[in-house]
Length: 295
Image 1 (cartoon, rainbow, N blue to C red):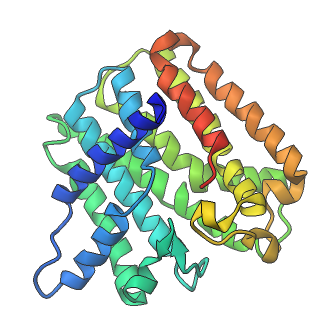
Image 2: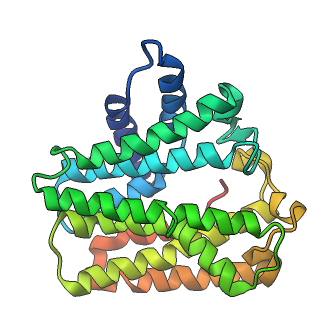
């Protein structure tokens, strides 16, 4: 295993262990709910968003405990979004990461409530004094994650995505959708570093630019995987966008056009890291990992 994947896996393990301690145990009359929450949040996954948060925090010497707790909160939001995305009323997927989705492993009611529960836990983690000694910092983390995951971010982007099945959107709307649906949480992952510790303006701008371009490159790669990927590799259904007539970068630009766009964004993302020199090499490798991923 190369050094980057080893570091990615080590970060994923740290987040999994921390989440195991932070999530409610599967006991008592509400055990079914808590079990579903743990199934979603502690199951297999790259933990890429928490990894980006941890690496960005390391880059600016942010407090390690606060960084890890922030990464866990972010993973809770991501896990909740996947649970709800997979529901019959949304994407109606039976498989996620190579195993049954939460509503298949449990039931639809438990899936809805598990997503709700994980969203609540995310903000409970951030609001706790263990995340940062200053209440103003904790409040900023809560505010920014709420915005990134709500109607101005992930949830709003998901609504546009649903409408893309029945409306003819152009490239500008598809770009907006991706920046909200996927890019907002990736931007927040990197932004945690600049919230947890004071940084100079040029450092903040560099990290914001990096996350902005990386988030869109990530979603374009998702579009490409849906169009050209293999179900055995991705761990979920493929070809759904085309089957639903949904507007994506691939349907608008074609496969090669979408690949060119993602490569361009990846190059821009790396350019934003020049101010950090070799200290940002891991984040540069993360860009290549996202571009080359198969799941």
